[in-house]
Length: 254
Image 1: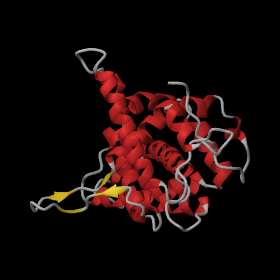
Image 2 (image 1 turned 90 degrees about the horizontal axis):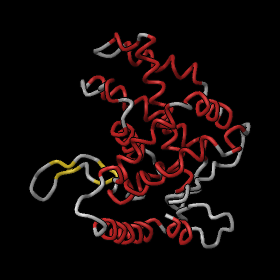
Image 3 (image 1 turned 30 degrees about the vertical axis):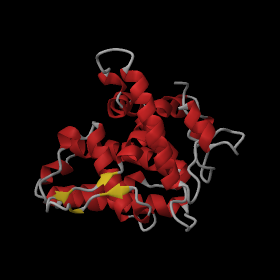
């Protein structure tokens, strides 16, 4: 990961991981090669692949750090972006109450959805910070977050009415990726950046679900796994009032 940071941040004395405008495709190609080399070296170390070193599982294991600091992260987004979580919870409550499963609007169940929303926002923040300008358009972070919040509500409503919303999975990494994919596919700027693939029939006539590009999903999973502890426990910018500069995504040694 150090090698990756050094390449992407070679003109940045702070060594902040950043994908610059117009460089996404080149980055994807570079990362794919680098990750393949890493996996090849890893597989040569022993006959068995260590299941705890896959990016998805690493990210899943590190979710516990986020889960134990949920209030701190909510405060971050209240201060930095002016998000009114009380008002937001009322909107979520209405969506749940109007769904085929209105019992989910009860406080205990609703609080699980709000915690999931906070986890989702951390992933959105990570992607916006690393890839702040996916197209030629210069983005405004508050507006991008607003779109992400609207997507969260719309996706929740669609899943509920399609009877595909599963409360039991909200503490896992998979639904976070599903919600992030939905946002990336709907955002007017990120949807043009070839981050999300699928959503159409394959040459064999089979429908391919929308998915984040496999290399980018691996990359973002690694970034989350290696940075969330540092961001949560050591980064002083977490306590800065709005408006503040974007949180810098710096990785722990690996």
